Image (cartoon, rainbow, N blue to C red; front, side):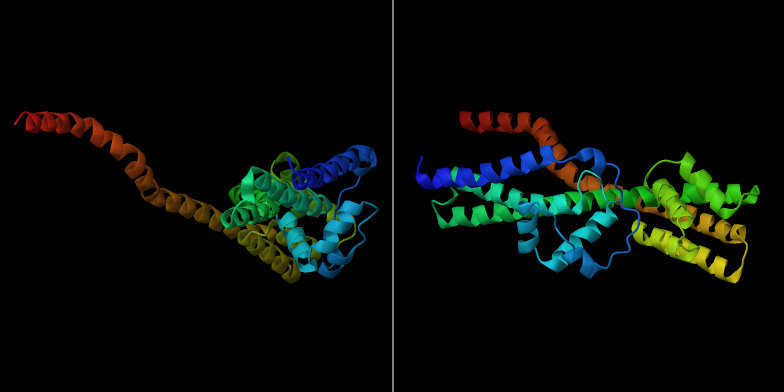
Length: 293
């Protein structure tokens, strides 16, 4: 192997080894106690906040545009800010992934031709944006789960309020007894209110964290009821009925799309073997017959 290849291997192994050592050497016992509660930091402060003593993280922040860091933070917020992938770790992993993908393509012969160089650059770009796609997929699944659980949560809130509980007590009951991202967000909203945040701000923060239009509609109705002094039960009942209707319409829409989705597997994987089984013997007999003439 040439000197250039060894330098490329060292350029991948040394940063990866240092990154692994930094993860192992860090004190996680205190880090587990820290959990971000509020999203009150402005977008400019997110892009300019101090990076800490990690040189790899500092380099990653220097080469990453500030607006792109804000976009990554928004994607993480939509995904519920998973503990396994905080913002600093995501920013650090992306250049390492791009470097690893590019060097792997070069070792496989990517520098031998112009097409190989283009393939190397494409693989490096793909590896760079792959963590974003994974986090975005997590956020999409989270929004789908919230949209699925919302009608049941509204029904439970309506039953609890009509039984005599206050709205916040009903939120606490539904949040503690439920599971999933929506139940967690309800518990967090109550904790924000207990921490001194106004109800209106806590409800609006709930809508911003969920990023689901139906949740925003529900929060808007609750805020208006709180401002005008209306009964919560009168607001929850039409909201629950509307969410049930929307859920039924979404199920009907998926059922109507199913025949169209089945067409392509039917044409590609079912019809060809069927034609071979049915027409194969007839074609073989025809060939034998014409061969004897």
